[in-house]
Amino acid sequence: MSATAANSAACPRCGAPRVAAPDCPHCGVVYARAERRKAVEPSRDSPPPAEAAGEPPPPSGRSAAAEFARSQTLAEARSELQLARYAVPAALFTALLLMQTDMGRFLLRTFFGMWLHELGHAVAAWLCGYPAFPGPWFTSVGEERSFLFALAITAGLAYAIWRARMEGERVWMGVAIGVLVLQVALTVILSPSKAHVLITFCGDVGSMVFGAALMAAFFVPPGHKLHRDWLRWGFLVIGAASFVDTFPGWWTARHDPGVIVFGEIEGRADTDPTVLVDSGWTVVQMVSRYVGIGILSLLALAAAQVLHFRRTRDALAALEKDVTP
Image (cartoon, rainbow, N blue to C red; front, side, top):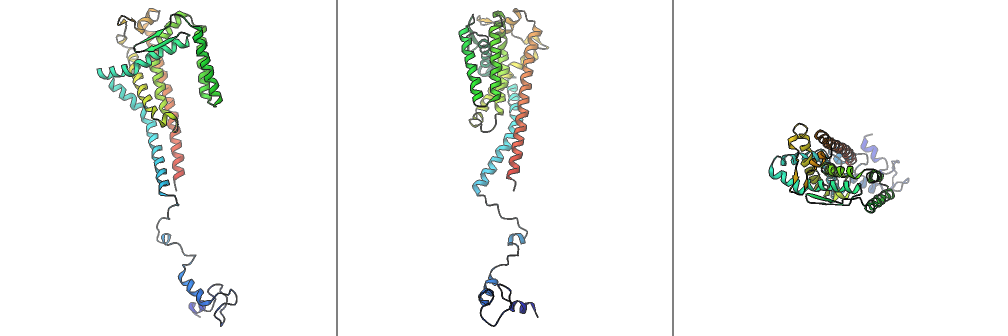
């Protein structure tokens, strides 16, 4: 018996032998109607047309908007990885190029370096218990300690510790505790003469330390306020300009002390290096201390960049793995 005859001798629905009747006694289907339906419907066992032709399967079902959002997120993560690698070195290199011109040197010092320099004087004075007000090219420091002012600084730091503890910010709590201990020690233990020397020394220290800290602010994670509002770019520019305005000069002074500015500033006061040398420091001691602080600031900045780069790279790898079909 041929295959066609065999198929026609069986019920197209249940496969039972046909009988001489219009419908099947086993499943009740009408033979003619079942044959027409079987001819029209494709076999369930046959592969879909696209797969049979070797074409890729249809998309997963995500909308075009969802696919666009995923691609944008992936592009931003890849861009952030490049910024983690090159942004800070590029800012420092650009500031170094500007320092090679008279106009660039003037701009970097006037609008960036000078302000962090004066802030360095003021912060050192505050930690030593002296009221101080940083201004352009000069910081006014009280002649005597004010223990009421020192108590206000202590209260502010204690409040910062409490807030950091309540919000679970252990790193900031540790920083605040360290600053509080330093403030108490400088206020209670350090003599007035040594305190004034420290305040003088911390001018260029502020330019380098605060400059490195502002550059490190570029490494905040996505979603942070500094990242969302583009503030980190402004901090990066200010920090790089201030650091480059100060550190290369002290680095050069290691073998060329002639670059150190001694003397008087417009009849107002002696320059910081003059005050430090008059207080008993040698030129070698002064230069080595400034250079050491600059190198430590760069090392801390480099460590922050490495941590940020690894975190960004891992986040990108996880995102790529998640979006891979």
